[in-house]
Amino acid sequence: MRKPGKIAPAKGKLGVLTPGVGAVSTTFMAGVELVRKGAALPIGSLTQMGTIRLGKRTEGRAPKIRDFVSLAGLNDLVFGGWDIFPDTAHEAAKKAGVLDASHLSKVQPFLQGVKPMKAAFDQNYVKNLHGTHVKQAKNKFDLAEQLRDDIREFKKKSKVDRTVMVWCASTEIFLKPEKIHDTLASFERAMKENHESIAPSMLYAYAAIQEGVPFANGAPNLTAELPALVELAKEKNVPICGKDFKTGQTLMKTILSPGFKARMIGVKGWFSTNILGNRDGEVLDDPGSFKTKEESKLGALEYIFQPKLYPELYGDLYHKVRINYYPPRGDNKEGWDNIDIFGWLGYPMQIKVDFLCRDSILAAPIVLDLVLFLDLAQRAGMRGIQEWLSFYFKSPMCAPELYPEHDLFIQLMKLKNTLRWMMGEDLITHLGAEYYD
Ligand SMILES: NC(=O)c1ccc[n+]([C@@H]2O[C@H](COP(=O)([O-])OP(=O)(O)OC[C@H]3O[C@@H](n4cnc5c(N)ncnc54)[C@H](O)[C@@H]3O)[C@@H](O)[C@H]2O)c1
Image (tube, rainbow, N blue to C red; front, side):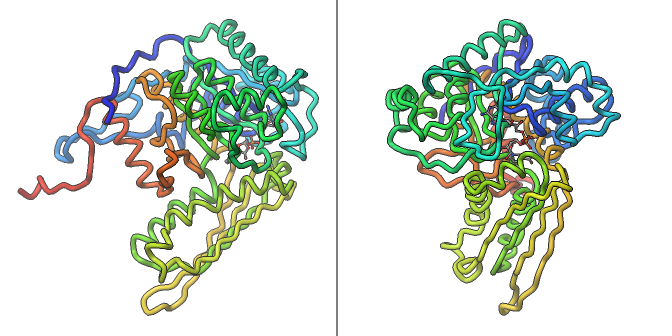
């Protein structure tokens, strides 16, 4: 195993670029500013609130994560982004309707200062959106070049030392990896030929990696999960991760299902339905975008339950996920789950979960943690896929020969052990035999 490198200090400003200045990204930006002003707490953020145990349980060492590893401070973050609508982050946040007026008024001038750059967009990939604030170019390669110019211009203007990009834009239609995604040469050729399997999100990922900017994908789109881009990330020393922020219903799934499996409780059916009324819901009303989300949401249970290892318990599991666009609810989604379980001697039982959640409130701290951890990873010389950040994703990216780890608790252990490993601390296995010697 490669040894962790020396971690470069988090000196200077850290730029944060989000393709998509919508509900999630404005809730994230506004939240960081409210925390900086001392007007709110960064609840839900592991980097800001979390601690990490070091050494033996008898040592009593449990510093805050942000005091243990060198993370950029919130005061050093500078924001920018792209959107297909010209609304400032303030207008976008008002339209998204996540934060109330008392919060928004406190950060109004700050949010008004974030004006999105013109987007690389193509309606063929997000059917239900009609944007006007979009770039013109002779081909997709040229579009990517324009994005690279934007990144360089942003770095120069905002005087940042380092930059991270997090995809917070709409979910694109379902695409599968193809031959053209295999190598950088075929990928670039396909961009020049306007190949239909090159989606706009891939152009942002390509531009970020080429500019040495770590990239996280908050949506379920294929985006950077391509051999060509993973290779490029390694070559350019860029950490990347994805896909699809693990928030509401899937978060609950990956909390509950490891518990059922731990106790060898069988599951016969898991029916999940959602109603939501934000722009994300409108986009997901299109079957192409829904298919991408559906694939992402379905994966977790299959991997956690391992039906091949436990055919009597999970071999017949029927898993169904529905998302319904229902405007009256706005960003306040309701996710219902009906879980048909069975216990000793096969006796059936049921569990109902009704999660009245706030999508962007759950997603915003994830964006913050990803920004800070990706920047840390880059300063530590880590590159390519960062599987230790799978804690934050519904469809975690991992090496092609591996299956993704979905269990939230294993993911958290992996994340914290990675931090210990980076800092040269002992890994914690929870064996604990030494206490009884
Ligand atoms: N909120 C959550 O809990 C959550 C969880 C997992 C994933 N996500 C994903 O995060 C993304 C953002 O969610 P949201 O609620 O903020 O959605 P949103 O619709 O409010 O914001 C997305 C923004 O992206 C813009 N956009 C679309 N295509 C673009 C492009 N090519 N370039 C630049 N901008 C573009 C849209 O105009 C919109 O303003 C979605 O893909 C969503 O599926 C959200």
